[in-house]
Image (tube, rainbow, N blue to C red):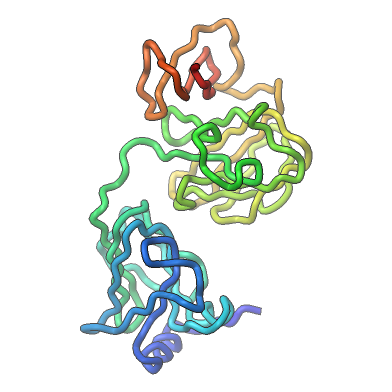
Length: 282
């Protein structure tokens, strides 16, 4: 059973424990080891720290020798593009705090532990978010040939046919390269039945109920980290605007979405009629 503490109680604990907070996460100088976190002292009434390439992090008033100890004093909040630079309410909880995008951030936690303010010198990345199928079939990496295609940054498609099919029992997730704003799991078994299902942010891994050879459609939510719609279409099933039209002319685009009239050797996004897929030109 999780131990829950009020923010006021945690604040009192922090101020009595050498006036420090403890930070773990993904960024330069950080890792996910609760026994050896970054220690931030109270200075001029606030706890302030800066981290390069910050992606996700956790804040706690306790260190300890395990996650159970660390999470006793954990505080969390939701950072968005819209609330950068403004104080965001901190509440007791052990959820990760994700940055709107990976970058160089300065984080200020108020001395009373009631708010957290994040600022960044890193501009928001241009273009659409690159999203990948990541799991046991590619050692949980983010290689280009496992990247979804998109034309609007909202609806994404992946051609999950050989050699990019998924074997029964393999675990996987749909995520961006940094496990940041896109990090979706099914939380259990996946059945390819052509019906859309909602996958939750930061949920447990998906696992294929049987060998899968087909197409995957992902629709991102309007608000980052809300549930996303995922549909698995078995090979040969209708896939909406990725249905196969073999007689249509091919149009080639580079991985930034720019049309290429005469493709040289490399990996391209191809639109052929209503089908969108990736192709290696040799």
